[in-house]
Image 1 (cartoon, rainbow, N blue to C red):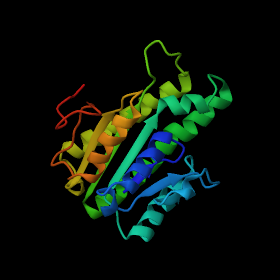
Image 2 (image 1 turned 90 degrees about the vertical axis):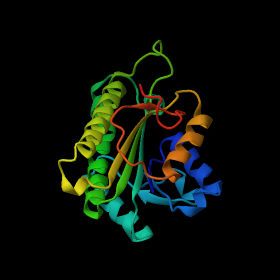
Image 3 (image 1 turned 120 degrees about the vertical axis):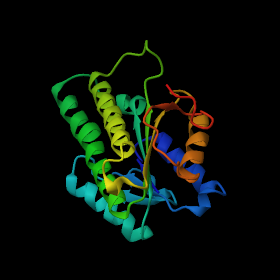
Amino acid sequence: MLISDSTIPLAVSLARFLQSSSKGHEFGFGLLSEPAGDGSSTLSPTSIPWNRSSSLSARTAILDMKNKFSSFDRALLIFDSVTFSENLPDMDSATAIRCIDEYVRGYLLVSSEIIKYFRQQKAGFVIFAVRSQSSPEAKANIPVAVAESAFMRLAEETAASFADGSRPDDTGLQALLVKLDPSEDTSNIEWLSLQVTGAIPARTQVRWVKAGSRGLFGKL
């Protein structure tokens, strides 16, 4: 299982939760991490170096997963607007360029490589999870808001492509689109852990669901 990524506290907490759970012991976890190191090496889940804006790094991250685990068939991509807004100042040209490179280009490149690999093996489950700002009154970080919209469209188009059945190599590929609670990380982690370690769904969810939904019926 590949989890993105170590710059997101929620992703690191999820990896630690899975590491300590009995169900999590049945899985191997690769945590995408900045090559320079960000503390992720202290985790048992294997650190997978990833330079967000590099197409070569996206390819080598998948190869690294295959080399360490022989194969993998699950991936969790989290877009955390709360964390990213804290890391980036608001609108200026340098911020806009960095945001596009890291949070639009980066997710597009790595998801493309994941999907390509899953199509080759005709099996795979991708979860796209979004954690938006805590309230409508929160000041929007414009570059991050634009990148979040791009991530959501990437997720929606990926799920739609899996669901329409037009590609023979999409047989066995599933996607799940999740909106995380902006302030309930404990419940987010517990619910996500059930999704990533449970049985792969029989069909793709093309609409967003709320984390915590039972049986995935709490659609938005």
